[in-house]
Image (cartoon, rainbow, N blue to C red; front, side, top):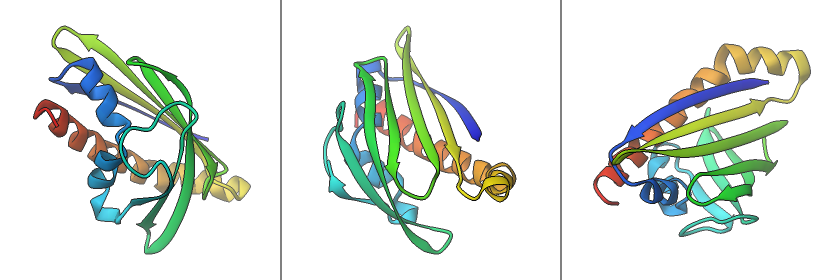
Length: 151
């Protein structure tokens, strides 16, 4: 199992950052490079507790689909999305938001596990963890820019 932890400081209010992070349209725009799009469930606007979305994207030259569900949410402090169908054996992404004066500290904890036992573990640690960290960082920079410019 691999764990990625990120922290992004955003010069925007807590509620703006929380909503930006769960906005399907902003997610699609932030993942333009992988041609990611929402193809099932909630496909536009804000995703809420117990909602689900199926994403379709191109990674490593392959078209992939993954369905995630919002399994926990407390506005505007945190929410959790978990894969219910897709390429990982396990995927859980926790999003935390903390006010710091006029700024917001957005923290991510992304936990994933590839299938295929020991081979999957090696792929996770030697390659996929770095790839996913770059992907999440790129997304967070996009969200930071959007939130700081009042979306």
